Length: 426
Image (cartoon, rainbow, N blue to C red; front, side, top):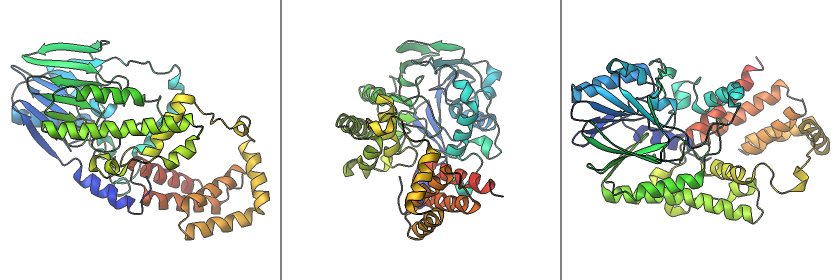
């Protein structure tokens, strides 16, 4: 979301949303936050430790081992992955010395065949989204946590495969004296679970809730995240009488009233965007139109845990549109559009030539009409008129937008793309 104070808002959120600490939630259960990009939950069982997620790198996981040792001398004998994102399981190898059982859920929907053929572009887009090659000052944060360890010299991913993989909707076990329910929870990922510890009234919810607007769509690219399934998962979490909710990012929710209030508002906000998008689609509105008009109601938009510091409402709307009816917006003009280069050349001629377009770009940048300026830059680039000047102007526009963007992901993408343009003209 673009905001005149976007950079300042993101800085404040990053300074306050995930302070470095270990919270004793109840006897035997601890929430570890701010020590890595993701959180971890320590559960002290009768003779061992159950660990939910392992932080993002081997070095940070070694530090987690020291935190555990300050609580108990019991070994880690069980690891549960809330889901398969690398920042939640990148430290697993650090615990191999105690030979733990590693539990995960299988995805409810398989990855599309031949996705591996997209590794190059997906890796590039992930690097841009997360700001992997940017400085700490440029990044501020990775949105919902501090930067991943490998970006700041604190280790590397050290994965270990799960030893127990479940396909069930729910698995109930007693692990070393701790009653645990693991429930399939499709949302941000198709292999997500939440963990219910009934005797302590604790839910470990993974990434289906964290304290800002979620990534209903990831800029790096991914299969459609089923937003309706995500809402149903939140309904399921709300049906439990939890007094504590421990997320995979940002602060825990403490107290039955807080849990119900925050999760219900979070659920209602996601559901509102889904419903409004579907209503608009049914009226024939396009993704561009819907992304420009759908906003959270003020009573939800003003809540601190729904700020657009990671995902944004507009990107969510576009993803829902494409997820339900695909690329075609219903306008027959778009069935067989002119090739981009041909269309751009005709538009430039209509405007009156390259110099007029350049003049309009410069004037628009001066007047802070930045989006219009970079769209005009793209017109020249599409027409193969991508002179050094055009690239410099577009980079200037992208860097200006990065200062306005509240989403860490969007900020990173603007900056990284600007640097790519400037690199290509050196």
